[in-house]
Image (cartoon, rainbow, N blue to C red):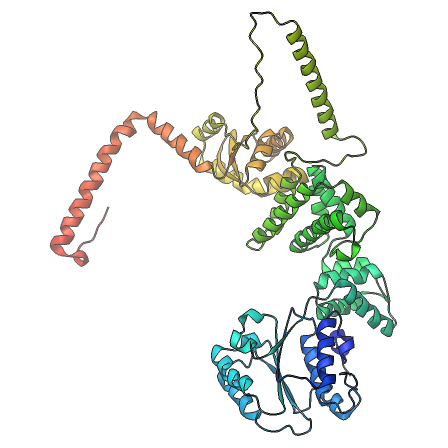
Length: 570
């Protein structure tokens, strides 16, 4: 017999086998055992949470002659026929491919016939939200006045797309996402039955990657079994799911908390070079930060989605500033939205990393073991304040009668200013700029970026050369922060000059301009050139008059001879 996937082999056959849906299964079992079943049910919830499995178990329990406490025996011919899917009285229909009015009318006609082998005829309609409005209307009459011994079970992942007239005629059961511990418990049972060795952390990683779906978890477990050499390990599981280890996530978040741009970019590049998915990294970072915030308030491990409580995690939770964690979540969420619309996801992650590792006002910085730069700055500021206070006291003691009193000034918070372009430097380049110099620079620009170290490479990833002269170049940046870093990074400017001297034979001084300011700067230069050339200024009205006269002649010709007979030639 050919190999069958785990989710098919280990599909639940009893209500007690359905993981994480105790409220639903207990209600259904009680209804079956007390004989209080309805004629129509609606099972809604995320994919892989047991909706269709529960529907088949319900069909078996309704028709099984040996059912006990609402559970089927799974041994009689009727139960086994339903399990194999060949009992004519239990009909499974995929609404995605049978969503027309004719299919529902056919169901309605056949529902009037009595069951042949079972006591009840059960229709299981999967993805029922895919039915057309006409099909829903055709189904509505049957649900309103159902035939005897016919039960409809509707399953859907999008209940909001089902008309309220349908929902009101059913008993609705909402299947929730399965908790990671319940998924781990089920996978542990399966692996023990198969006598396969495993690491508990590997199963937890699979459960978190499945996002509450048992079918997804078993599919990933199937891949892990094929990939492993007898033992399922955490390292192999992370390679399959594309997830990042908690240790790397901790270091990455810590780099943001201590404002270490070089370390953050280095970690990001090493993670991406290992083949980790960029979207998965952003998602994992958001969930990891969420766990930090939740654990800071609750100190409960059971509510964590991404993390395992260990010494490294506990230390990070104690030292992390909540406002900075909020900022990481906001930036990563925005980055995810940008990555969906771009094929260069790594660029957006690099920009996000640079942004997150910049110091922000009122930020609480983690104390590093060696006493970081921030500690020195704080100490220097405190010493300077003490010195100023002492000088102020001395001045007050020695104050003459005629002296003016010292006025205390309230320092206004400094607003974040737009990057100021050095127009003099830019205009100097533009005065001697040529198209050939720009084309030559554009040809070598990608190679120049790859030549630079990781930190400088990230700054220039979103840059674009827009003008070049023999000894200068103008480069635009998508973000003001990158523009500011590029203009103040002496090492970067020197590296660019060295590379250009080596490749094109001469050095060129780089001018940085934000992309949104470049049209304004360029227009200012053009206006300046016009003002410095009176001949062009005087000639402009004459040219406009000539163009106006030409337009009037053309209009008059069209009026006389017609548009079809007039041909305009310069």
